[in-house]
Image 1 (cartoon, rainbow, N blue to C red):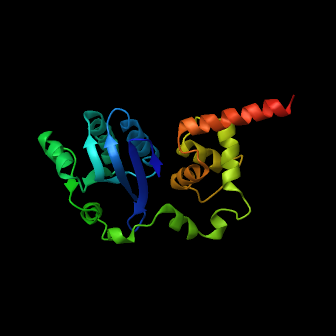
Image 2: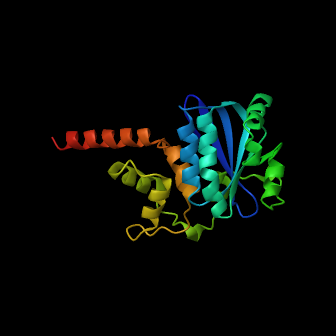
Image 3: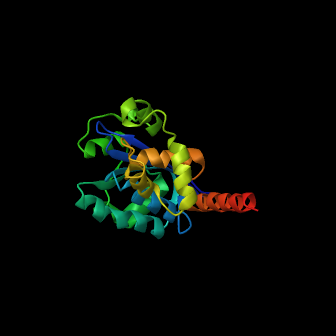
Length: 217
């Protein structure tokens, strides 16, 4: 789950192939929170190109919010994906219609219809959060004795500006050679560790540098 004071975003994977990302939003999307949604779409979009955005908890969307979504649709469609919206409250839906956005962004009244749009028959009731998927992975895919979070902590300490996708690439590279990873595993690991924003990673790296200087005195 990713959030700031105005917007909370909860991502989940759904569909038979776990290739659809459902983003459940709670709060409002304006110039102060739109960047959070953009980051989410960009990060998860490295591996998933089919998005359903659940607006049931969204009270207001400014032009900046609509702009973020519109800015990602073309690239997703070029990769056989899309972005669809579901479950808007009356006030938000009125703006959606007023702006004629139905000509560009598809809307469905519920999540099941959004799933069916992507050609998947799985009901929304079968949504599995990443922690469930992680528990079902084969043991040999990720060595049991390998402390993934310790490794991520080491990487963040050296370069706190890396995002989930970049950290995944390092973990799969020659130095670590960890198999069976995807961006969602890293994304949720960063959340568990309290590193879910760049500011938090920068603060951690700064604190670690202070400790190191102190120890060397």
